[in-house]
Amino acid sequence: MNDYGVAEAQIFKGQARPARELGNLDLATDLLSKAISALESFRAAIPNEDLGPAEILWARELLDCYGSRGGVHRSAGRFAKSVTDYDETYKLESSNRFGFKDNASYALLQRLVARVLLRPDLIGSDPWIVEGVNLLGAFEDAANKIERQSQRSGDKWYLADRALVLLMLLKPEEEEAWENFEYPEPTIFPIRSTLRTVTDLEESLRSVQSFVTNSRFQETYRRVSAARELLTKLEQKTAKGRPPA
Image (cartoon, rainbow, N blue to C red; front, side, top):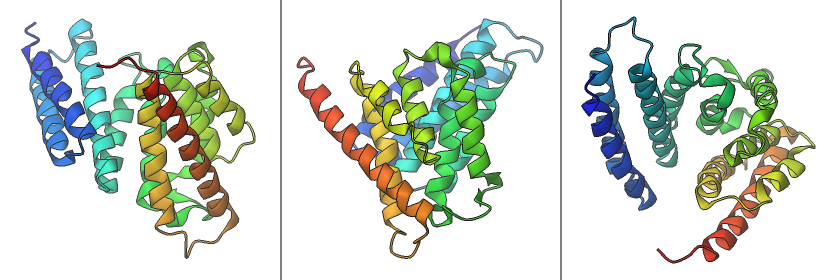
């Protein structure tokens, strides 16, 4: 099987990361869209019955590209498009076909966070439904699934997802969860990725804070702001300790 399409997608994806870091979100979006197109062409050449390494490779790369583009859309304030991309990511992550779902929680959580960003004014509503998803029940379900992945307890991405879902559920265990993420000190990329998510949440909630006054919204905003402060300090500390490039 010729894996040129996957290699091409990996090049586009690699170019998209620095574009996003430099704030060129339109370029990052375009590059990731090209990566997704290359992967779709690659998949069209795989027989439907093939469940071998070629398809697993394809699925892993496509999941990563959709998730990355969802994050770029989120940072650009294109929240409806972010929801769509994270839903596509979740289809791959949760499929029994590819074997990711017992060792991943990124899309499980980000598709819900994207809905909060799309309609922050609905936090505290009863029922709390955005784009066809009951968010309170979905966050509870996500928390339960993440707890069942305890074999990942040494994985900083897992610990960040666990802390964030406990935040959204206003659970008392949230503070300890952030401590578990903070010590021992994680590498810079999980910190920056989580900080980006929390900063986007804080800005979205701040935009409606003046007219959404229910207690759940106010406590969510308080906790999001506290998490952003913690992660900002952790990023500064970790970046300071990195060797020069």
